Image (tube, rainbow over all chains, first blue to last red; front, side):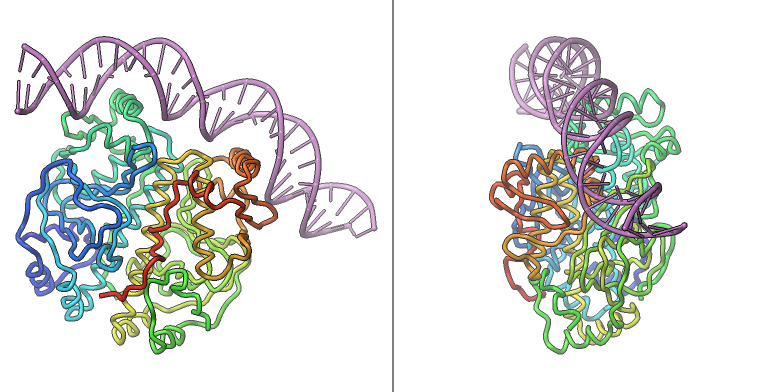
Length: 241
Length: 241
DNA sequence: CGCGATATTGATATAGATCAACTAATGTGG
DNA sequence: CCACATTAGTTGATCTATATCAATATCGCG
């Protein structure tokens, strides 16, 4: 099913078969989006939400100097703009990184669905709050870590999230971000990201090349990143109230 | 009523009288909390949420070097840790800045309440997403603005939020944050915040002294901050779906 | 083949950190 | 009510992480 990965990377919540099936019924047929394309602009009114089946997307804001600041990277299984359902209007842009497959969930159908399954409503709420938790960690990353720590933290988080949806093999995973993208995520320049990656590589912690990340020494990388995975809420399976 | 300010600073959503009254009934009697006290720690399981009646609170994360990184400042009318309702466990610490008055809403009662009033449920969801929107802007602030811009942005946001709940008089408002706090919010050192405030003051944009902020030139301050208030969702009154 | 996108490396500049000293205000115990 | 500690703010001197500018290398692709 399309939603096989939904909440697998956000697995705290279990969905019943009927909930899962109903959610699936609400989705449009999958659509392919080309790489590096902005699909929603700040201020746009949204009436459907995008479920990311495969590929990577990102959310970002434009700065006056022309550079953008990424505020999130979305991985398969994410409901990219579910927050647009209560917000109705977006405060940032959304773009694809690599080529993506997505399916759409119209908001009016989500409303019906949540009336029938209040528990599913709280699961969806939970999912949007997980994004907020990642935002907070992102703030920490920018505010308190140096360049090595920021890049390392970014890679640790991505590893953990992709691992949860089965997209890690032998410590390595596909990664469509360029050094420029990584720079825009970490509040650094592309040049400095390049040097930072060299440091991490020469230290034997991680290799990033050819759109593939190879985690060589998780422990040292996580230490450099001050990474603690608790904010991803993977560690327990609790039913929502 | 205690909740008079609820969603006044988040005023997109209107509550009916009955919703408002029911929400009020769920709240504990108001409690006073002393200044500069951590009230919840990362990892704590929470079974009630805190409604901030008056005063300022903040949420923060500890870095390895001992410094903390603020990830949000909460102002009167905010449901400080409503996200703890779906999340059940917090990924950050919560503390008071100045002295505060709060009231608590037990989570089991919130569940009942949302079953009776699904619309109110979406309003609460909306409220937590507003925090996420502020997180995103915070990421932008740290990733793309220099020290002047960061401090200016912080002050612009606070001004806008306090204005919405009627806590601004003649362009000035009470502000319990020390320069150290502001530094921990902006990813700067206290020394540099001090110099930054001097620059903004000498430029005639804003005066921060004696726990009071005086906005002297909103336009220039907002330009310095690249501040656009749309992410606070004040501009329109739309009913949730 | 040649062109745009990406990655890499070196040289230099700078915003902000760090270290240090001092002031002013506030509180507190004797 | 004083003596002294504590907290917050201010300013100067120096250091450093990262930005900026510039050149070259590599690679996929039309």
